Image (cartoon, rainbow, N blue to C red; front, top):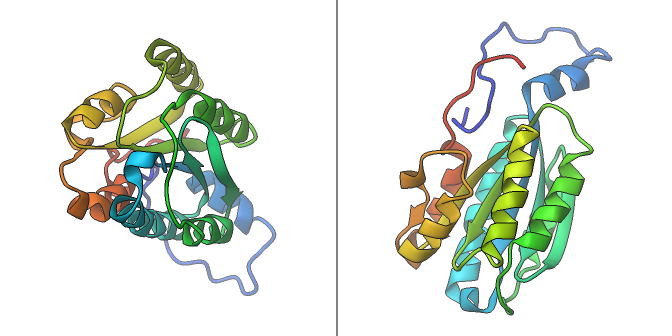
Length: 206
């Protein structure tokens, strides 16, 4: 199970066939909801955005396997496209498969507001996973919004392409800043997929 999953547990397998009426509630108890936000600004056009999509597809698969509802947001200065969280990740995968390029500037503020609105509809472990290759946009406003979301027990894991982006996105992460940087475009797919294992393991039952 990926380390970013908050609750790790072992138990005897379910033997009730067909599954009982409480299975979905149990899965929600030990899963959660994650929004994966991928930068599609102009500097990502070409190889970088396609590498990002590869990594994002793997992230979606791992989240679904861990019983997390997973959604995807493509962002630049605003929300470019959105797939709301689902248990099977089908909308997220379809959106990622539709990406053909990247354009525009960079600002995380409006995407964060939209993520907050979405995650307000869910309980349990809530995670925002963000990749970017530039700055945060209006930095003070972005960090204030992040602080508000963290105060509501929403966790953040981030990746930044190159040292400057990594420095910016490390200020958002709930985890070790040393894990944020993806140094080369060639490592981008693995770096984004690696967000699914980058958070420290949480074993408490909230």
